[in-house]
Amino acid sequence: DQNIFQAIISHCKEYGFIFQSSEIYDGLSAVYDYGQNGAQLKKNIRDYWWKSMTQLHENIVGIDAAIFMHPTTWKASGHVDNFSDPMIDNKDSNKRYRVDHLIEGHAEKLSEADAAALLATMDKLLADNDFAGLKQLIEDNKIACSVSGTVNWTDVRQFNLMFSTQLGSVTDEASEIYLRPETAQGIFVNFLNVQKTGRMKVPFGIAQVGKAFRNEIVARQFIFRMREFEQMEMQFFVRPGTQKEWYEKWKEERMQWHLSLGIDPSKYRFKDHVKLAHYADAAVDIEFDFPIGFKEVEGIHSRTDFDLTQHQQFSRKKIQYFDTEINQNYVPYVIETSIGLDRMFLLVICSAYAEEDLSTPEKQDSRVVLRLPAKLAPTKLAIFPLTKKDGLPELAQQLMTECKPHFYCFYEEKDAIGKRYRRQDAVGTPFCVTIDHQTKEDGTVTIRYRDTMEQERIPMSEVKNLVLNKIA
Ligand code: ATP
Image 1: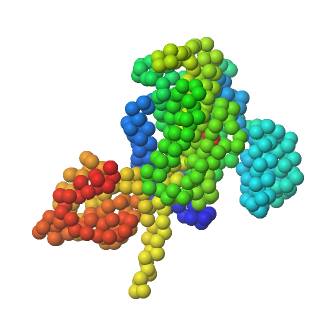
Image 2: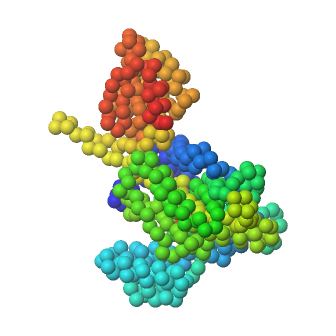
Image 3: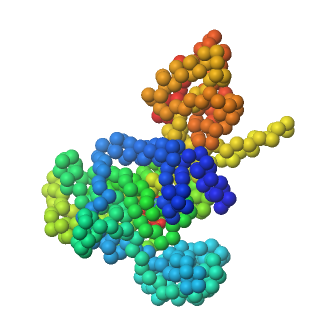
């Protein structure tokens, strides 16, 4: 599966989906740029999420808060004190590891029962912040550094993941601010603004998509773990005491969202958190079977009234809601759904990528195809005149003019048709249309379907609606 993963990474680069950041300077670790096809695919995922959360939910509205926030925000949220991962260095190789990743890596080499026992012990020690115990566990299991094979470790230390920078030109302590490590706090501090101006009634939600930054200790595995990434989050405010119900509801609803993309359900599973974050009373991950194993793509957290209460205390402003149905003032409880846009992108690419053997007894053949859901594909329709003459390009341009206001189209007249089809397969274009001499006579074109590679003749005048129906 590592080979498939490497093939997907190469494919993303070769076809303009993802480039390493600042590649000409040998790149910047765990930072990536999206190319012409990647930016479009990413936008389509973002739009699909945004529409399903806001437009299709009358009680959820969207906002766009700034990346920079008042530094007290992060004291109130607990990030200054708690947003850290335990790390350990290997003294011989000078390599740094996240303690949980190191132990999980070791567990993969053990029998199922031994691995389960080891991970249970680890979870307990992590939950207790028992750093000495964690070091002991690493030593007792003779966990070696994967590079040098030695077992010479430093103590376990906490490492805060927030990036800081200076606001303004005066470099005193007060001007130090953070790049937000999650988008959620922008929603919490705007709770009253939105509730009042939107005359929102609990239960209601606020959604947001935006960049977040984390100085991850070890960032590898391509765009799975990045230092600059995008989150799509929704905070749903509910009456205290009803959070369990809403938690279950959002858990199901978010899974349904994933399945609505037509992705294989057997590749998904829920995983309950063993160690709850400082703000949560229940938390579950939606995990996906990536080529690198089952990993988290989205978290659903019951955050209690922790955040709003903290902001109320630190800002000394009342953050409460008057519930007219029960004639009571309260600080609402929060259910949060939090998904990484880049991680969802990786999920979509991994589930779409296929290397197919098309050999017949006569001829060896193969193709690489991205079986992207049609509504997410960067280009929906490719239009090819069979030849560059006889008025075929003009007819093709006519179809371009008709379709491009409605969805992304791609025009190409170079190379053999077969080659042009394969290039579109590789970027996931669900439909290709070829204009030939018969088009001039009877107005029909050949439409070719990416997944089945089947072709049929249909009137050119029906192309636009056919594509519109399939991407709706
Ligand atoms: P982990 O334990 O893997 O570090 P987390 O539990 O801290 O992740 P959350 O804080 O719950 O992650 O973040 C919500 C979502 O944001 C995750 O499910 C993931 O999709 C995304 N995400 C978090 N960190 C990163 C990252 N470094 N790169 C890309 N996406 C990320």
